[in-house]
Image (tube, rainbow, N blue to C red; front, top):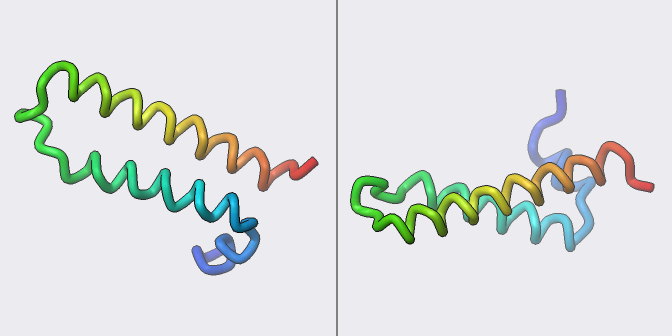
Length: 67
């Protein structure tokens, strides 16, 4: 099993930026007060998470098959 520093060393600068952005989105949603969100804010949060998940899966795919 790889630890995080080994994995980050395999990422290109562009991939590291994408990873960091996805991590920040997830961190923001973890601290959000879901009960206080308006319906529109909830939708924006869901779309943000959906986008981050999509990018994370593409990044994983790039690492598995870099062609």
